[in-house]
Image 1 (cartoon, rainbow, N blue to C red):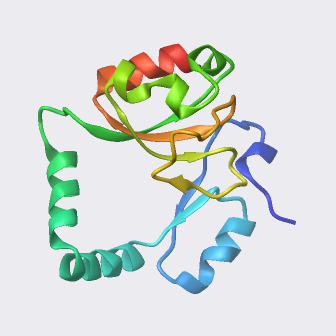
Image 2: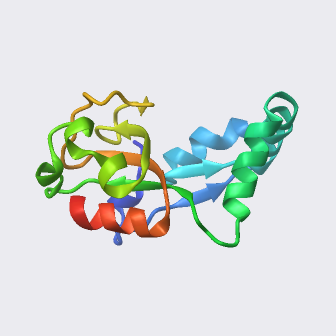
Image 3: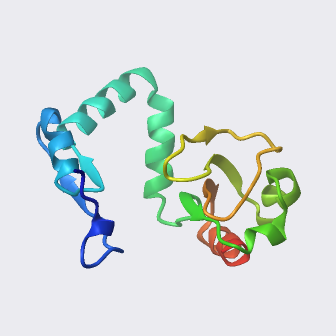
Length: 146
């Protein structure tokens, strides 16, 4: 059976492992890792991205290295207070109220991401939003929605 960090003495600990061979990823996950990172695979993907989408790679690099730290891509886990914002993205008015762009939503860890979600996307406790915004904007939305 697969073990996860939630099965351990400290269930809040997230285990991330490094793996040189992609053939070992599943074995490491079965051993209890929540995530497995392969630097060789990531490096290869980066090379392909540099060839195919150089402007996107440059944009993300520039954004992440910007010393002003103006904008970041962050995740926000919605809590019970999200119902006060509204039942849908349109009603929550995240762009208007918090100045952020919602890039993706996921109802739970077991479901797939909805990229570029429609304004009719329903919001609820336990959902995760991936947003583009400043640290202040993210903190404000977290405070309002947790």
